[in-house]
Length: 283
Image 1 (spheres, rainbow, N blue to C red):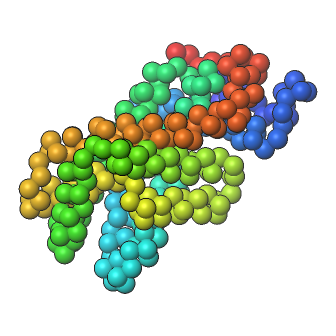
Image 2 (image 1 turned 30 degrees about the vertical axis):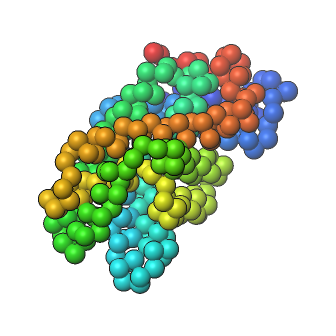
Image 3 (image 1 turned 90 degrees about the vertical axis):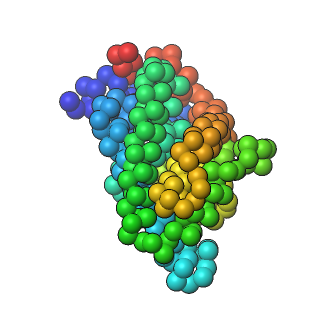
């Protein structure tokens, strides 16, 4: 079906009848964001699961690159830059991380184009795919790179035994904020090079700043578990991931997405009130 006949798609601002509508770049970006969010929320479950699996596989590639570069150069900063390869691959391959879904899909729900349960479904299936992908890639890396075991064990114990205290909760909230900021930067351009730069920035921050991230750190914990030498058990991962994922969610929604919706409040209100030609998607 062409876009002009798609009832879920919002027309560009310059095609709308209301001459008083703000047509600046922020509003245009918000229209793009709502449309993309709707497209992502209507994907079938199998597609969501596969994109989630691929997302973690690609983060694992970045993790391997980080380890190799750090071990070869002795520079953790260079290793963090190498880790960004994983996020660039995710961008170019159109894969998905759970923490990338705190802005664009949410905008479709906030604008009234999609129901809340579609967003919850999107988060749940993407998260499940990320966990499956994390298990697969770390099982492969543990077998392929035995020299990596001490590093994986150290990182796994660090995260799995991490206390739930204000410092670490804030670090996890910042983890959600950082990747949501990357998503936001992507929304202001259709050019590939600026998107790659944004993903590189996000990957570096994710690796270099000590933030806590539910998916990346799950890879470390699974790596430690699969070595059989970490002393950890599966419930240690469960005790870690629930509160980190929640803090990631709060950080992404509260520190980026909510402010974005306030910034583009006029467009959001117009879509919610049905002032555009687009209709709601069937529930």
